[in-house]
Length: 80
Image (cartoon, rainbow, N blue to C red; front, side, top):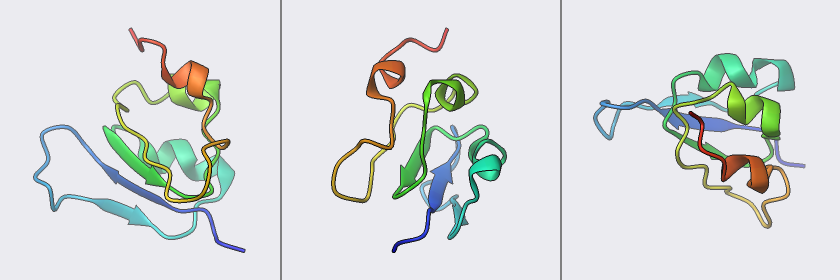
């Protein structure tokens, strides 16, 4: 089974400015993704509460089959 992971970048950061976490326990998702504009994920679940807590997040490519780990309706909402 693949382990949950996050690859995130923040606004204004050069393309090589990435924070990588190869394994992310559910309660660390917000800490590790805080301020990110882009979050590449595989198994990390992003529900409405987590998405509201990440107001800078604009793009979440899922590096797996399907996208059921992301609350798509919540992701479509304007964070303002």
